[in-house]
Amino acid sequence: MKKYYFLLLLVVHTIFVSANSILIPMDDAQRNHLKAYGLAYYALKQNVEVDWLMNYRGGSFLISYTPAVQSECTIRGISFELISSAKTNAILTEISKPEVNMNVMRLETAPKIAVYSPKNELITDDTDAVILVLDYAEIPYTILYDEEIVKDELIKYDWLHLHHEDFTGQHGRFLRRESAIIQAKIQEATASQLGFGSVTEMKLAVAKKIKGFCAGGGYLFAMCSGAETFDIALAAEDSGISFQDFTMDDDMSGFDFTKSLAFENFTLEPPTSRRFSDINTGRPDFFQSGTDYFQLFNFSAKWDLIPSLLTQNHEYAIKEFSGQTTSFNASLVKPEVLVLAENKNAGNVRYLYGELGRGHWTYYSGHDPEGLPGWRRGTTDLSLHPHSAGYRLILNNVLFPSAKKKKQKT
Image 1 (cartoon, rainbow, N blue to C red):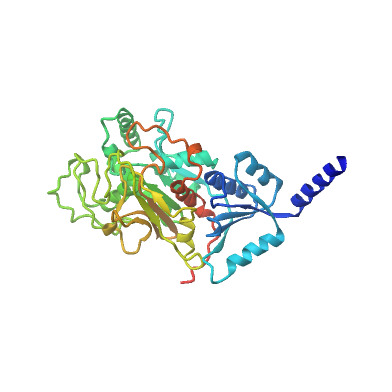
Image 2: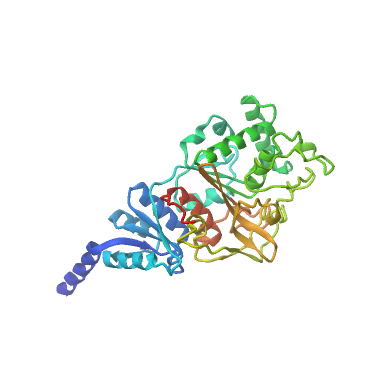
């Protein structure tokens, strides 16, 4: 018996010693897709080499073997495979074949993550999808809000998420809600403290700072109304329009759509509407229960590296989910903007990408990929959704700044 036990230990030891890499599969073999991103981030923080295998088994991660990384996989409940150098080379050889739609993206550094959110000791909003998934994946981040942005603290970070914000200064048009009233009072006090005449003026200044951050090489990711109102505020800068008093008879000819990122030729809706503009084609009340699906586009991993990275997934049909800005009007998307996902049945787009100066931005419509409809839906428990394809799109963006930049082949 001791002899067999010794042989078993010898075999196990040999496997571990000969392991060259740790493969984190991201297909249906993965037990927890969302935590796998946190594992990749952890490895980068430990200066361990990480390769993102575009379109290989759902966008798997290939990580240089270390006992610490292996231990973290076990602790976090992440599926992994220990593979030899021969197996590693075989995988890389397969991916390199010109006839297969795969590629290897080397991840270099762990990005410094910031989240633009009012969350603090008074505002304990815990429904923001990005905050939820960063916490669940165990990826560290810093919360910034208006004061920090105005004081240029954003320069310390690589990636910024805009939560479901209202950059028009109308407090989301939800002042009947107690939490919105508290937020409004805090924002009004902050605007006065920073020397602005109104919250609208402050939000425009913040939007311009964030746009400058992106143009200077930052990565911007916005969801829901954060995306829609960001573009509205930028385009309306010199229009003379009052968002609070706007009527459909007002002249919008002063809007400068060259200043917005994704949308042009849109029309505002009056403050009596819960919809900010016709950019949003979905119901703006969070009560819509999705029964349809939107589809991710399939890009060439060897030619279109960035859109391929942003759409890595194990599922390419994603269940619709709602928000104050549920979906984007395809007819208002600028021609230079790249559409990453659409719902052909509904005639809308859900996921957009573009470049600004030396930086990149992504817009993703909807509030919470796994959220229940209704105001009192509560906080989503991501332990019940470890394979969420909708949440994977968020985490693709979180790791985006880590990717080693390669010249496009086009």
